[in-house]
Length: 88
Image 1 (tube, rainbow, N blue to C red):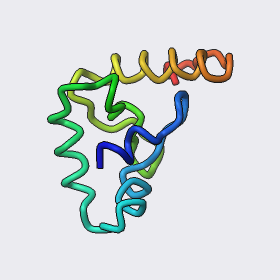
Image 2 (image 1 turned 135 degrees about the vertical axis):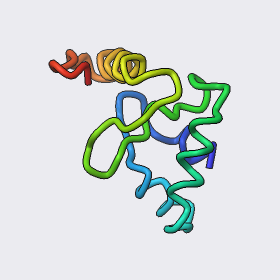
Image 3 (image 1 turned 90 degrees about the vertical axis):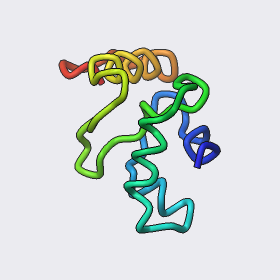
Image 4 (image 1 turned 30 degrees about the horizontal axis):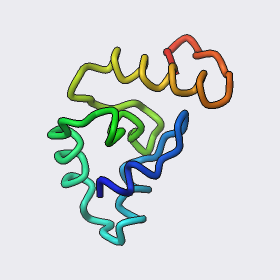
């Protein structure tokens, strides 16, 4: 799972559903969420790039404000696109 997360490109996001599909484990959404919550290497294993299937940022161990900031910073670095009002 960690490798799947590391393959999400800088400035992009993937849903939990997309991650479990890549893993071939469609019922493992909760397991992916729990693993992300326990991630101690947040910048090396970018759990902040995982979002809910409805496009909402969802929960994040280090607060949603931090998730917004990380995603916004990555988006600017990746494509030079400024963050929107939500910070993404």
